Length: 230
Ligand SMILES: Nc1ncnc2c1ncn2[C@@H]1O[C@H](COP(=O)(O)OP(=O)(O)OP(=O)(O)O)[C@@H](O)[C@H]1O
Image 1 (tube, protein in one colour):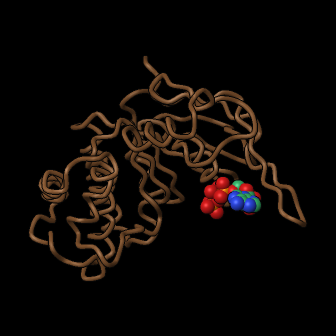
Image 2 (spheres, protein in one colour; image 1 turned 90 degrees about the vertical axis):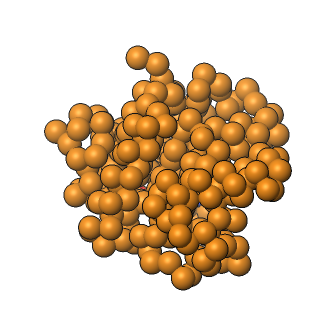
């Protein structure tokens, strides 16, 4: 099977004035093209640090992260920015929608970053908003939407440029259970339809069933990989 993301012996530490924390201690992980992988483990075990490295947002101290066959270590800063803008979608825990832009303008951002002309970007963004079931809210402001609707918009924004990799940090943490399940069902159907490789950090055991595989982390290491909630 082809790998979409390969992490080889990745280490990362953070130094503050008081303390040095070894957040990742030699991560080895292969994410298979097209799979829906969940990353789980106790608070502080390094999940966000790992997905930030996979997304090219944070740089490791040692080891390699290869995404779609391209090693981040071998890219210049500008090449990495360009690669990330084209290939990676990221969904934050707290939606991170821009309050002064409308729904459709928020979703158009990755296209505009990829230098698509505004009129076309808005048109494509509107189609994506339609896909997540909110085609009647294009001109709303984000704060006029419910939490679940805002998360749908965040998903539309992360996917509008058809990235090969979608990385999500706790996509259901600020949602009630039934809204969280609907969001996971939406992400799963997008994963199937658009063949997007998904890596999802979660604390929510009730959504484990949506994963193909679950990578368990503890204290900066992958301790186990299980299949489909087993
Ligand atoms: N910018 C930073 N500066 C200093 N320490 C950090 C920084 N980011 C993370 N850490 C530390 O690195 C460790 C791993 O943090 P990380 O956020 O990756 O954990 P996590 O598993 O995502 O936690 P949670 O489930 O609570 O979000 C923690 O001990 C954290 O305090």
